[in-house]
Length: 35
Image (cartoon, rainbow, N blue to C red; front, side, top):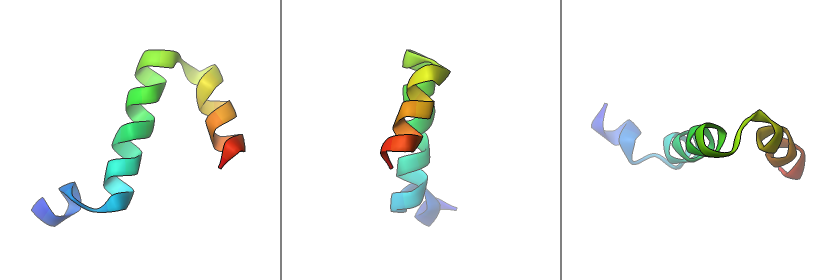
């Protein structure tokens, strides 16, 4: 479980969830299109 905390994928998911919380879902859609 501790290893998951340091995995790039988990870090990315945390980053995205923070973006959604702060900026809203409109930015999430733009972010996904950007990827």
